[in-house]
Amino acid sequence: MPHKATLTDEESRLAALHELGLINSQPDERFDRITRLAKALFNTDIVLLTLVDKRTQFFKARLGTCLEGTARDISFCTHAISEKELLIIPDAMQDPRFADNPLVTKEPFIRFYAGAVIRSYAGYALGTLCLIDSKPRTLTPNEQALLLDLARSAETELQLYYLRTLQAENQRLAWIAEQTANGVVYTNTENEMVWCNRGFCKLSGYSQLEITGKTPLAVFTGPDTNPATIQRIQQLVRQQQPINADILYYNKHMKPIWVHVYAEPLYDEQQRYTGYISINSDITDRVGKLLEMERLANLDPLTGLPNRRYFEAKLNDGLAKLVNNKRSHAELALFIIDLDGFKTVNDTYGHATGDQVLADLAKRLKNVVRETESLARLGGDEFAVLVNISDDNEVSAIAERIYQVVRQPQSISQQPAQVTDLTVKLDMSIGIALAPRHSQQPHRLFELADQAMYRAKAAGLPFMVYSDSNR
Image (cartoon, rainbow, N blue to C red):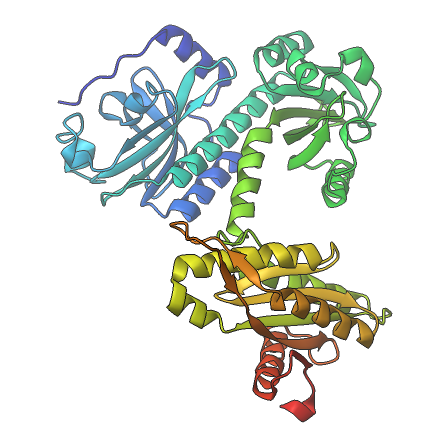
């Protein structure tokens, strides 16, 4: 028989669940959207947003099943809500708690289950966002984090659903908002802040008196806040549409904080617009981790330079700006740098020494490449530089500057330490292609710069600019 999980403070949990008024309620697009996104991301047979009642579990949103719920005593979610955040069952047939469960032995033949706990504003476990599959599987750490993020979105929707039902009861709304660690703000029809909870005061550093009568964007945006995000939020407010955005805010002490803003327009009984209620969550740590992951994804681990992926994105961006600014006479110069003799270093002294040579060369190139120039390692012994130029003479000057750096002898300390350091001398060939003169297509520009580089190598020249005559 199914093993029964033990819950604490069950009466309070059930009271928090029924306070929402969602049991046996009609489908809601806000929750359906979350299950659709989960289905697209994880591609499991079934995705459910469940609410666990005293004897049943109700499916507030569902994909992959026509059932509206099941008995609680056989539900996986009963076990999940006793967890802190997440319950993962890679193979239910191998788990003694579920091996003889009728949901495992019969339709829908559950083998894999992952449920992320959804909690009320006071922290009570109400249900789960869960993934179900008829084949065993598991979730990577990144997938687990993603499932938890979706569950937090569902929690936000539950909080907003509840707050909307209480908008006419200002005293109770204030009490509810004070219980959440998130910042809650109410704005009027002029988008002026008229009330906030203690969570928002803690987040922003301002008292309610200091922000009253001011608009959020006027108070909290700063020098690095994305103008496009500001414009999008302003447009949504003008259209009285829901807001779901991540924005860089600045607190009272001008410390930057990343905030997720989820806001809904409010209306009175006559459906007249009265303002917005918003929930503001501090996501600085999460965004920091994502930015660090993105930085590492764009970095060459050996040299610390941007990698080919990042460089190609910079090239695409630069070409797009050229297209959009047709009045400008500036051009984009792509320099492809290929080392000559590097294979000999690897073959003679080993790959560890070769790696030292590349890392040292990268440091020296960084020192001569200006802030307005983009340097990257494309792979192997190939580097690239991207520069905006306004004069053909600049091309030769930049190529000569790079060439002289590479030509300088490198002193490499060998491991284990030798009596004397190893001195390495390299040569190089540089191929150059210009946009829009030669092409405005990124792949074609790379091809032409490569052609020029190989022609320079064959001719014994340090660098060459592509032209039809040197094809």
